[in-house]
Image (cartoon, rainbow, N blue to C red):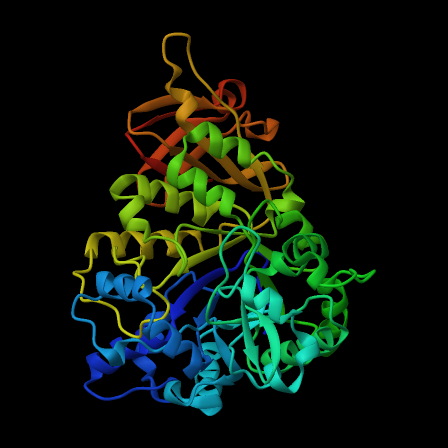
Length: 488
């Protein structure tokens, strides 16, 4: 099933989502027996793919560690005040085997879910975690050469960073900026055996889906891995991990889309190493915490780079958008995500305004009253932008007047084919009213009359082409207001 150039992807936390479906239906439900009407609801207009996060077999050893970690337990109780032991199902990133958990429906259940999604025009994304595995993963004892090994002295000097498995001292997984994760074993990106195993694992995963989201992909680059593990890693190979792996993977699964979770300004590097899309964490930070000028500066990058970014306002790692981007600011930010180049990622519960960030260890969402107005707004937004992000894209200038600098708060861009714009987007990314003139650098607008229809609310604006070409498009937007204008 081929992918569009700018897909809209919907992330579902598989375990809590199925728990909610089970409560709704009054019976235990797995991926293999979700009713068609619920898949119809998932297949909202404007979506291109569903990411079923967390389908793989979770680790009993990792679960035991989580149950004994008081810090995690406090986070669990904060998210679920009525927490029960059954709600703690283990981390989906503490993988024991890349086999669909039987409690979620097993491989057969996933295969049925994929058919249901594909029949509705939706592609399926699954996870891969390259940096670490569960401490009870069969490879820990079967293939110790795949892991970072240390000595008894390393373990004694840093007991939080190492553990012993069948007489070998193995590192707990980590990145260079945080303490070790106590529930996982660190793989060695430099190991030839691990690279072969990664190709095999990704190929097998790729048989079951249409794309793969790769967790913390930048940790496997030679530069980051060497900085993190130093002498324990050994000498760096001449070839980077991802190009070596992807050359072999794409020979077997040529149509697979590969998405990198990426931080630390590593997006361009990972794009060059073969990923189709990389997380755009910088845009998220700017939409959540900065102003229009910061967002505009970020969007000045080349189209070749922006086309391969994945934009989001929330995912399972970030706070709920409704909690940090409330009300109209959140709607303005969502309009940006829905109309920019690249992939767009939406998260289960985002449309309904959920505010509780659920730790990935938990298998049940708390009860929250849905925001029906917000849900309707999101569905309208996805519907009207489903066919918008096609053709050429251009960031537009906006100018104003000496006594009115509010135009600086207006973000504007256009999608166009040939010599005229097809859609113009204008967003007031501020809490005050804003006016400005958006430059439309298309001479072919002149000598004709134009109708601009706002796809969000249906308003129609009649404009003279000579005025548009010479002076630009005048906009007067309320705080956090936006236009998505179809130009005819």
